[in-house]
Length: 462
Image (tube, rainbow, N blue to C red; front, side, top):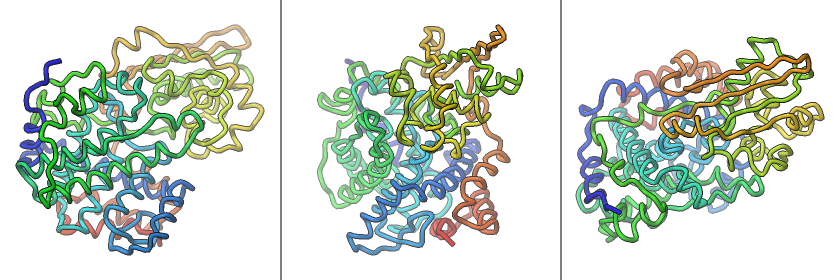
């Protein structure tokens, strides 16, 4: 394998030298747009049992701090707030995704950047710049690992690449450059972890991954600031990240168009509350139900095309995916997603409950779903995540729908208005209408905010 040159050093230079003035207006707008997504999803995610368990553990440590735990009245140490907020952001499967890297950058980057405002002064422009840098680092590493290869080894790329992204964000805001920033990346690389085994029992550990990556990245920067020595070839080295975490990496993808394309602008947003691999098939099923007035009781069979990279996440083992027991099981079940789309005409948070999964009519629909891999779909992956669905009805008709860009992809993005609606719907359980409007106004003018702790204060419970 060509080691791709001094990748770690080039990433160090990029992160350390990037300024707000270097950013395109599009990158700035995306940073604000995705910040509102972060706010809404995390506020709602703070109400989950997994988020409450993490907060409970933090409170038992008895280490008070000034950093906001979003959706609560609690405050804690900055790195612990990043842990709690990253986990809450990831818990309801409505967080953003980069398709080419097949990971969730926002769940690591935003909690880290917000928590760092309690370590050093952070204004809106610094916040935006660090966020853009963090997205680039995470996405570039994820692409270079080759997502299908990384997943096949049992790794969760949001967690593994996330530690580097959090180190980049923290280092930028601490003002680290040169060897100290390189050390931060080196320390982060020794903490890159995240197992996909959560799928075996529908466990909560996936939700923990981005929070711990944020925590790890912050500590990497703190240690590097004190001169803690780490390897300076952590990405491209013989025992470095790319070689250790992928059997077929593509190192040139880390540095390709660095500083020219900001990958925050290539980020997808989820309208449906489940794994990203389910989003396109859901869109296709919903289109057929709406266009042809298909009633669930008239469905004979539903076939959905799924990318091979996601098959083992959402379609196999077949019997388990047709009989989800936990919310996590449901979030990673394409048969369940198809069934509720047929039954309820949506796949929102309200449908992802054990009560719905136990309904006999939903079980019957799941038994009629076939998940099919298709070389024509795979040929476009990971640049595109296309999908299709076919429904046979009892009266002898067959209907088909295809989609190249699922709703929420940059090419088929939610408008600002739709993003605001998503934020309002998700945050309504935690904050008032007045506070919701204050958050929206703050995010829309984020570049003018003098102290990011002002935004954090708006994200507390009332």
